[in-house]
Length: 469
Image 1 (tube, rainbow, N blue to C red):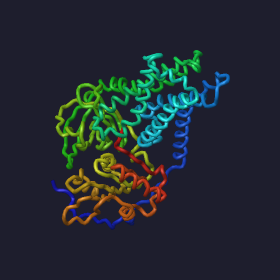
Image 2: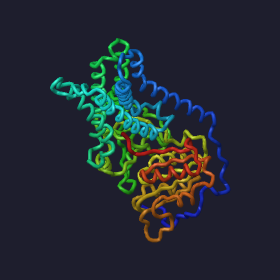
Image 3: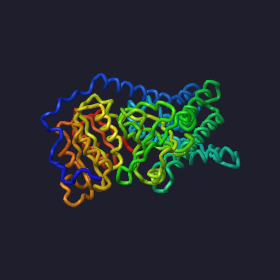
Image 4: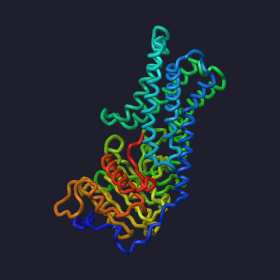
């Protein structure tokens, strides 16, 4: 293949300094206010549900009970509610992520998981410190079944938080971890439900028991929705792999078409969950960005880099293979932004949503100002490099390649993305542009800090991490 010549890079040029560019349209203040209102609404609802079990403490105030004893009970109740509601945040509900972004929802899920772990483990520790007789709940000689289930639930809560942090270190396959995460979560919720009903001090009345059951099923139903309802809906909407294209650098694009239906509409930059095979109930469901143009009728592209497990054999998928797509999801979208200028800072396979955005802009005939800073290990590993050269001629686009190991004669940017590199290429007053960042975590952290230091508002930053629960 041909491709852009290494000497074509001109790192000193700033794409936003050209005189023929049109003025920027500022972000709508009304849209900002609506986003804030929706955010406060969802957060308020979440907090109300998490704190709802504390209402049971006020409904039946116990006599002659110490503050520390009531604190221990309250920690258990709130911790249980937080754990139950954890599954809601990642249940693929399309009406939640657009206001926060998938990355923010995932971060929220993880941080609240750690907080719930602290609450749940503090519950027995505080109670035992105040009243050692509660140790009988964990004594198999008193009630073996109860002791086993409570100990298993405590271990399950720890695993729910710890496994995402160590999954790659222990080489646990993604699909098995994803399934075990759902099974352990369901088991912990059921044990917590049974434990609360069995103790009965605060849930002895019909209304109190109903509230406890509602909180528990608020966590169980999203798990069933993702694992049963969504695949059941997808079984009559299959797709067919039409082509598998080598994009360079052990990266392939699957081209899929709907089989017997119209498919779905999506915005450039969104993603879908892919399942390959005859059944949508497969354990192997993986989220991938839709890298094609959002305007291409009845064609969907998913670009995957070989990184192990499922992705290592993606280039061997045969045309004609049956597939299922569950989507679209995500708010990492160019079309949703009223700003005309956009900066995309991408690393490696993180470029896939940017490719979808650029292809869509080309098909729309747009002339918004676009800058892509694209980091890779070397020139041979740079996916889409030929197409990007073509897109530069078709769009008001500047592509800045950054290579860790450049070829001989390279005149472009080298090494890693740094503050100095960003200063050379980003607009001098960047608060009126929208920024999209996707790539390795160290790169993303540096870019996020750099943009914040430049005064770029948080609503003008979209962050996407390829690290889904």
